[in-house]
Image 1 (spheres, rainbow, N blue to C red):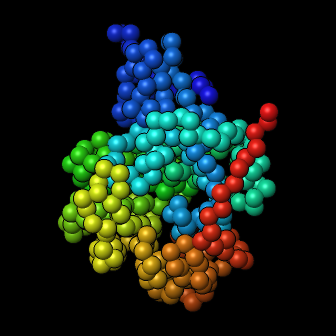
Image 2: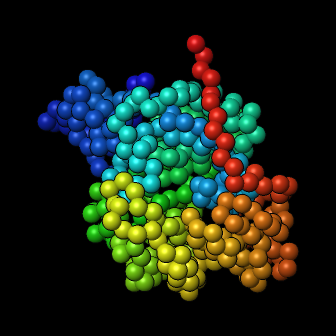
Image 3: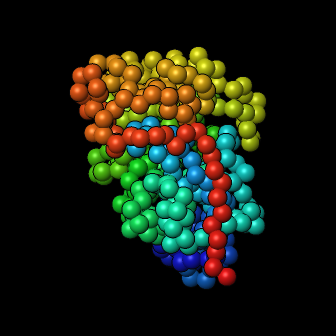
Length: 357
């Protein structure tokens, strides 16, 4: 349904500018923004997907991916439709690039979502599948309601948001995984239709101006963003500007959407990227979308003891105490931890949320 949008202003030429993301779309009557879900109706911009979702699932938190945010816990995940980037390699293109609002089959209020999460036993809710920035009003309302019900909140995002909208959006998030798609403006321009600088600004904001726990994911695409020089630049920037405790995930690409002429990412590329990041001092570097026990394991940043052994999304061994301390040397690991009893596991459980008639 249409819902009044925020973060816009009128221009002297009669158009209305959306101030939510750095695209700054300028709209005439009836026009939609690049994300497709924000539209000018009369003298305002509305969000056309408020209260509507492409589906709800209970996932392991590691699927977001978040390896240091209450490992082993479950999270209720959902998204809407549309996206404010134009990634040619989008792995969720059927949702994020959708122009068919009929695919948003599930309707749910923030209250209904919170109730469903509690009933399912999930401890967190994740705004994911497409970028929650573009449905910020719905995400913020839902996050506030979920927090009031004792749930944690997670944003899975490309970080493409303006300084104007950023504070209110992240004020209601407990954690985020930010998709740093590459470390070159050329890549962002050619393959995402966006810019790198605003994403780096978001990461700096999260690190220096919030208490949000965040991790970074980079999908490595053969011949596009996987050179040793670029990986060196990316990991050294993270270490220097964000700190060596920020977890960094390198994940495998598979041909999809408009980028089908590239091969899947070799496992060796991911392992090489991990070694480069570790050489730059990063303590927690992971490989994803492949079976790689070493690349999925959390090691003590001080003594190197294996603390959480993973196979993809499955936790095989967990040795941290509730404070996140290593049993061998006592060093506290970076992240958010609690008493661990049993991992949710690699399951993905679709659920339906009943709407009042």
